[in-house]
Each structure stands twice: as C-alpha cells, then as structure tokens.
Image 1 (tube, helix red, strand yellow):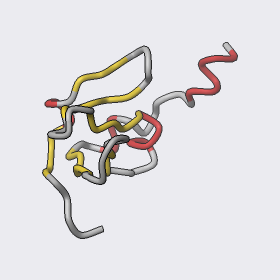
Image 2 (cartoon, rainbow, N blue to C red; image 1 turned 60 degrees about the horizontal axis):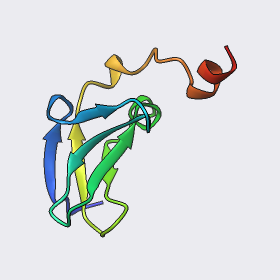
Image 3 (cartoon, helix red, strand yellow; image 1 turned 30 degrees about the vertical axis):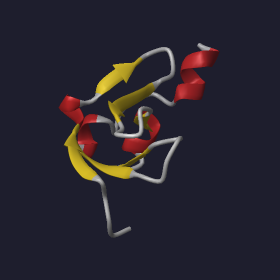
Length: 76
C-alpha cells in the first residue's frame, strides 16, 4: 500500500478495552482502529470504518508478540 493519510505513533493512540482496539481520530469524524491481534501479526495499517483513509501505526512489534490470543482470554 502506498498512500497513508498519516503515520501515527502507537503512544498517540487510545486503547478502547470495550472494543479491544487502539483508536485515533479520523478527519471524517469517525476514528481509525487497529486491534492488538493485528499488531501482533505485524499489521501496521489502521483503517477508518466510515471512509477510505488509512494510517500507518508506528510501533515495536515485539511489544505485542507475547500477547495471549483474544479467544483464549474469553475461554479462561
């Protein structure tokens, strides 16, 4: 993918425990979202569900490598 709206540090995003995603405001009024599972899989693109903009999340994948799988947490 070539064109990002912006590149955002993970520290500038907000964790939403209820939805299980990090989010960041989008100019359309909605918000970009990316899950911990996506980050653990080395995915660094956060999408906005309301428009076509995407951002690149700058983070250290090793910080998310040992996260327990979300399904396992629900079963425990």
